[in-house]
Amino acid sequence: MTDLRTDLSAQGELYGLIGHPVAHSLSPAIFKAAFDAAGIDAVYELFPIPPDRLKRGIGELLQRGVRGFNVTVPHKTGVIPMMERLDESARLTGAVNTVEVTVDGMVGHNTDMGGFGDSLGPMGVPDISGARILVLGAGGAARAIVTSLALLGASKITIANRFMEETMGLISAVAPRFSNLEFEVVGLEGEEVRRGAAGVILCVHATSLGLSEDDPLPMDPAVLPPGCFLYDLVYGPNETPLVRFARASGYHAVDGKEMLLRQAASGYRIWTGKEPPLEAMRKGMEKGIGG
Ligand code: NDP
Image 1 (tube, rainbow, N blue to C red):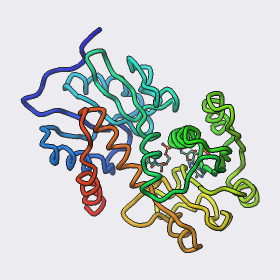
Image 2: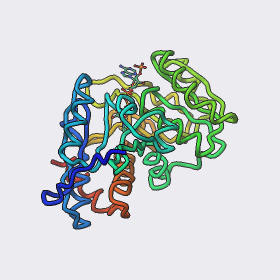
Image 3: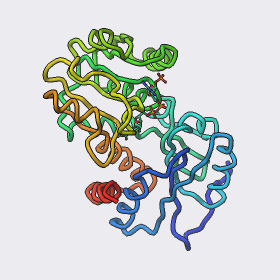
């Protein structure tokens, strides 16, 4: 097996994020805070790599001696053929967001799945076991969320999405491993999503709407049953539009910052083998948001 690692220890260890675009990522602020707190001589850089340069871009990173990197849109599935091995989280979700460079080659992990699960308790989300849940969206993040909810013992997951093809792809990837889990598919419009929301205790928003203030809401939060918890994966410096509307309608609602932090903490653990300095990372994230 080829050792892909190059010893550039004199310059500190190199980590980073590949994606397109990557400019607005908070990950550099989170990891800088983590490395500083732990006294690790390392840098975390942004690597904008368009889809048609993925293989070459990763080759260049390996030549520079990268120790590990995060992967974001649109490369979470595109990197899979380049991995020597996938861990269980990446196999279950069919997506890679964290790559570990080892002596045996690149290992793909998915820390979105565990990051979401790890965030539920701290965010005050009620017990998922046996519960009915509504997930809005059927992209890469939704796949990690649905897998996490299935592992936590949800009894029924309703997926509300625009296009059926992506939704059915998600269900056919996850359902065979969880035979007791019931799925329902609805659209995002009016009565359809109201029907899908009946009896749910948690609604997770995993579409890409809300990154811009001008985006429409993915659905009317008032269709949710009273007491339902709304978890928006989107995050920004202020309340996201969906969180703001949900809170104004009396729901408990949180955004995606805690998940972002927890998935980064898992990545830190994978790369360094050490316990992540979570509070330092949280402060780094908040500073990054403020800046
Ligand atoms: P993908 O591109 O894989 O999926 C996007 C999803 O959004 C698809 O289901 C797509 O549905 C839906 N969508 C896009 N545009 C619209 C629209 N105009 N109306 C309705 N639905 C739409 O992205 P990801 O799954 O990777 O990311 C989704 C969101 O989750 C992003 O906002 C991302 O920032 C966030 N995220 C947050 C994380 C965190 O740590 N907090 C981690 C990962 C993601 P369709 O099939 O209809 O196109």
